[in-house]
Length: 306
Image 1 (cartoon, helix red, strand yellow):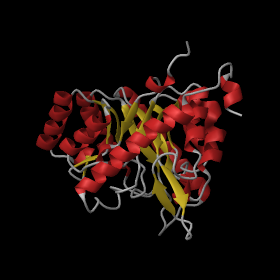
Image 2 (spheres, helix red, strand yellow; image 1 turned 135 degrees about the vertical axis):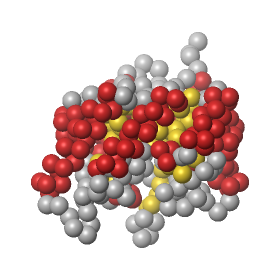
Image 3 (cartoon, rainbow, N blue to C red; image 1 turned 30 degrees about the vertical axis):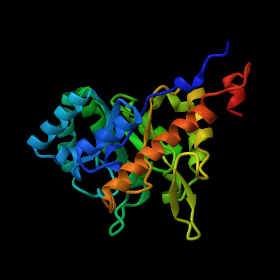
Image 4 (cartoon, rainbow, N blue to C red; image 1 turned 90 degrees about the vertical axis):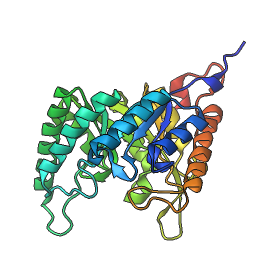
């Protein structure tokens, strides 16, 4: 009798602040989907590293009481609001805080980016590269000492859209305290082909520890209009299957951007954010069950990846 793929597959999780501002609402959305893990970025609209101690303690207790594990946390280190000419101390301080908080939460993965150039006073390309590589080497060393792994996302920054530069970051850090996070839907917002990037980075799948899932169609103005996973144009099912066929063993983390983008707004209606997150989570489960995990009898992974 054929095994049932519908109950199998990778861990599903999601970035909680796309469902709700507060930790209780984030946990409610996860519970409705039947998931047991959460990715943390903000709580009550406040980045995790900036939460007052009492607020962080409450969030950690709520997670423990619900029996929900934290699979990763999202830092602002090297992000769109921290250009390469900015004060490096802010990133070092944030990492120090997150090291303590990750120990409490029982997670070791910290999402980072790789420093956009300064639009007002840009460094020349070689100086930009040297500064990014130097900062990342320091950060990765500190992360490793704290038992953490920094995960670079294909988003804002020097290596955000370029697989070869991502590999350069792996080289300069030696892979110690450093890995990659692949987002399936960042390409349209940053002017590159997500699927082409994925194919270039596949030889380094062992260095990909976490995946964000979003989907989109391109509007008439070229800007992305986000959709439920599988309802867009970004070949998400094909990409997820390629990752699994090349040995990916991490989680798939929902970041739908359908009702809210917390770095831009907090959403107009809490009920709408919750409903959209749950709807997208169910769509991700269907996508895996129907288009990613099943494979015709006798077909080898290499054949499925063609």
